[in-house]
Length: 176
Image (cartoon, rainbow, N blue to C red; front, side, top):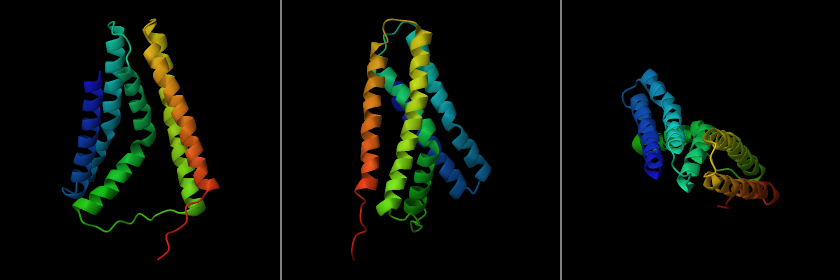
């Protein structure tokens, strides 16, 4: 299963880079949008592979759980990851100056809480998929999925605490 997760991640970034190449080098905006729209299909293929693997009798493993987290994170952060890749592509490949500004103080705290909100959204999507798979598989061999979900639950809480700390202890701008 882990090989499918790695393949999905590689395909995700290949499609993103191809979309950016189509947009900025070939000047084909429609093709770039089409390529970006392939990313949810990669996620769908991964979740289908997970379900098929488990339905065919495989015992649920940590890797199966990671595939579910991958789906939730990809859906919740997909647009953000594409925007990050877009900015990096323009900066390093097209040699344009970065327009991204560093955040400090309350502005940084609000940004971190928004990113935690995305994490909570990813967790909600992933949790729904976890429990759908567990119900659909209808097997006693899903303990690994439950354990991965519990670890992720803890990670979401820790992430929330860290994100909140940016508001409670704001990062100050560097002095010149």
